[in-house]
Image (cartoon, rainbow, N blue to C red; front, side, top):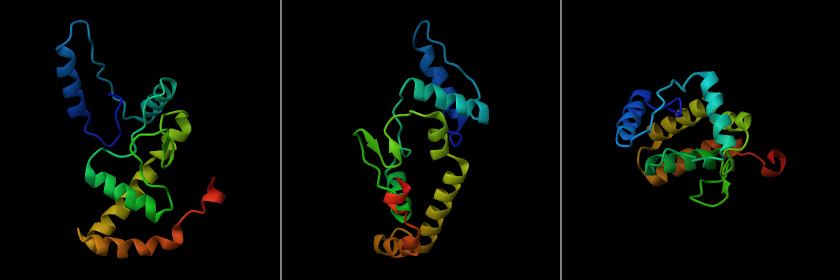
Length: 146
């Protein structure tokens, strides 16, 4: 399953196998794509085939938290559709750069900051905005960062 390292591989494999059973001649590849080597292979295939790059899991909470993290780090918010993405290209294009965008360090930082915001502010939108102020000096200079 060419899936994120953070998804439940058993659940994805089970769903893939059940879906493949519905079609004659369709074989689901049950492989462990979550190793470092296979993760890089996933990015190579994704770039070669120019797969769409979704910047969040798809739920409204992830969209909210992703955009708050981006705002706190001076990164443009997620835009649904279009050719550009907040962190770069809308499609996978370069396996090394694509992997860096989803590196363990980036993911750990995101979840750490999201958890800190949730603990500090809960669901109160105004309190969340106040909590984000602690990151105001960390914003990237877009001219310097490219």
